[in-house]
Length: 288
Image 1 (cartoon, one colour):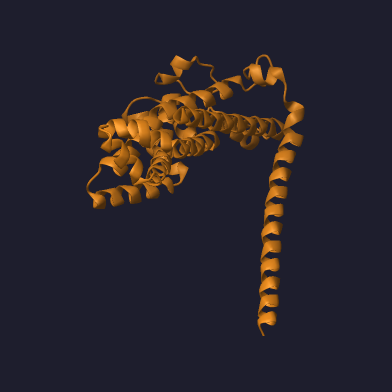
Image 2 (cartoon, helix red, strand yellow):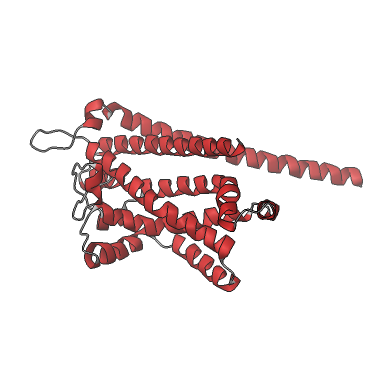
């Protein structure tokens, strides 16, 4: 009887392992297929002139330099604003807040905000930043809208990372005479750097892939700005995702759209890799 049970269990385990490996293989094949198809369609149109020139109907040129710069500006502005706000809010909720009921309400609110469709954020950003704050259709209005979108992600990932740090770290630091803020700055935050980097990577991914909210707030113009001009009102500019939408949906130029998709994929990979290296450098500095 036991032999029959063990045989049935072995068969079930083998079947489950087969299904797991099959699912993983299918996912890998899908990923490789998507990446390969994007490279196949987008690589022929990729050139230095395409990357370093602006689109012009007069000169009959197609370039995406303004879109690349606008995307970088949007990422930088959003992260500069959202990281201090998100990490600071997470520290307060986890380390300072005494009213646990209020903390639960705030956590529930952040989880609800993270599930709201981006088109709604775009409408709210248009009403508040573009019209009420008189920023106009501009990069700064788009960045502020993305700050609201990505703030819940930063707060939740940082907060969960802070919760994983043992209380013995805090108690040991306080027992040695450190103040609470000194303890958080020198012990807690370096130990939670993985969660902060993860939240940063997730936020960058959402910023790069966002188009619906930016159509209403940042605009569709292919303007070329310097970094400090991007902070000014009425400086409209389209990011790579907005340009991809315009070329694919409005103009039907799918080859250019696939080239932009290829650049987006490479840009995401570079930024994520840079964030991981930064996190590794911070961990090594903490260990020293």
